[in-house]
Length: 145
Image (cartoon, rainbow, N blue to C red; front, side, top):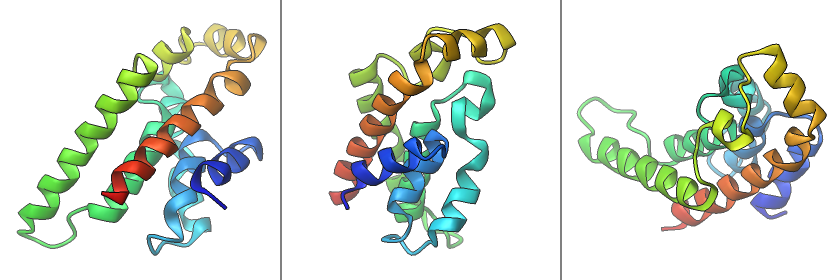
């Protein structure tokens, strides 16, 4: 199953956007899918505050899992991860106008009114899958390099 199909399937199964993106790549990168789903559990809806889009957070976790520094003094890995992070966010913002959840949804998810607006206007089912797909495709392209 392609990454984007897997991430959309997970999202449709009611996992949050971060979980859907991160778990789609986890097995190939050496992390159990259940662990990835747990790790991503707090990052959906911009960490429930409308901050950085959860799909972006999931993608950044993929980049970290693939390239992240895990040894003291490994400056090369740190620099590679930083570069990939910036590249990902720039591409995502270029394609979607922002990488901030509240801006993507045009409402404030820190408030009950904002959440109600998002639900009533089907933003979680119409906008968010597009963000999951976008983040998945971008990170898939980046980690192939």
